Length: 336
Image (tube, rainbow, N blue to C red; front, side):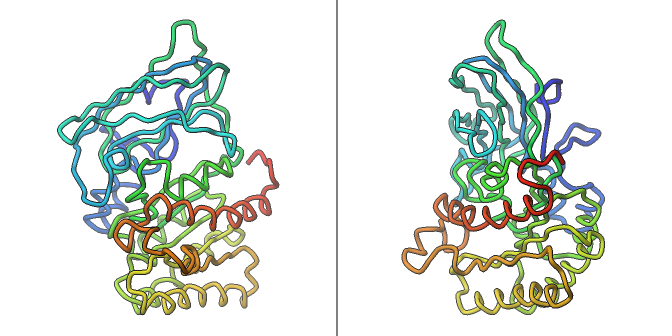
């Protein structure tokens, strides 16, 4: 079971009732009702262990299974499984309920020979109740390898950060980039409810982070709202963590194109003001360039949320910046 040693749980915690949470519950409730509700989803959660079993069977149960017009079933209610670590990790397979009336899924997957760390990415959009893993008789079942970067990367943002329309829970830009650099991470993405609130900024200051990445541009109602919140949010986190690498990203989607560059410039102004103040640990990614000029429509499911093409392009744009930030702070293979 996911709560039994030597299995280890990453990215989420369990409260006294056994429910998964990402934020402290009092912080979530004080931020907004939607943040309180979505706090109980295992977004970014991972179960990890090490085994030499050539095959493994994954079985789990979710509390609900809701259809969403923009999210495929494996992306909302499925789990997917990787063997190995870092850039050498490989996709083994997935499990998903057969249809929206089912709350239980099971699949037998072929991992192959050899003792390897296995990572199971938990469902994004449905509360997870239980998960079991069965390996072959006589197989070793051990604690997983440590991440190269054990101190988590913390991501904060919108439904896009949350992984909204990816076809699998491992196919969003947060999971991609953290996997490529072999880092633990926490995903504080909240659909329709990440507005750069002071309460959230204060909570993030209390986290132990290797890097902080934020991109809630998508949820700001308008450019003026982003202007009002973006730099104060940055300054709150920076004052608490003077040496923390902070990466800020502007929106990539072409929706509301008329405001896209204004929003980008608001975020870039936060970055430039930090540089002018002598900050050497701040990074800016211009999201407006992420999808290129041709075929932008093919990068989203609805002109807003990325499909797998869009997420892959976001990941490739963030990866070198994130890797540079980690290696600058810790060294390439640091034990942190």
